[in-house]
Length: 182
Image (cartoon, rainbow, N blue to C red):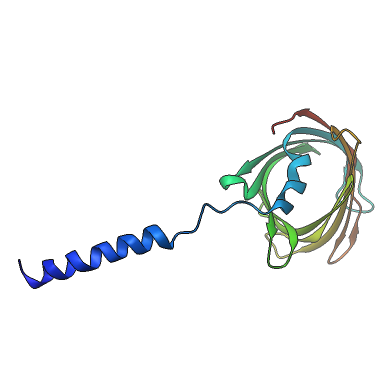
C-alpha cells in the first residue's frame, strides 16, 4: 500500500464522520411565516385602476396562485393581470427575514419592473409598503392595504402609488378566494 492510499484511508473516515455529525437537524421555517397562510390558494380579484392621476380608469381582472415552496420557507405568487387591453404575468416571493424580523415581498414582472416591499400584519389587515423600479429606471413607491373578511375567504384592497415625477392613484377591488390549499 503506498502512502497516498494510507493517507486517504485515514482522512476519509474523519471527513465522513464530520459530515454526519456536523449536520444539525433539518431546519424548520420560523413560526412568523405562518402569517402568510391566509394568502395561500387561488384568488381572483377584480377592480379598477388608473395609470396616471388624470388618466382614464379601467377595469382589471387579476388572478393569483399562491403556494408554499422550498420546504415552507417561502411563498411563490404567480400572477396574471388583465386590464387596459394588456395581459401581464408576474411572480413574487414572500419570505421572512429572521435577522431583521420583517416580512418581505420580492416581485418580478414580464414588463421588466421589479419591486421590494415589507409587509406587516395586524389581525385581518396586511399592509405592504415599498419601492418598484421600472426597466427605464423609473421609481414608484407604494402602500397597499389589504383587508380580509373574518372567514379569510374574501379580501378588498387599495393601493396608493407615487411616481418619481408625478403622483399616481391606484388599484382597488375585491378578491374572492376560489380554492384553499393548506
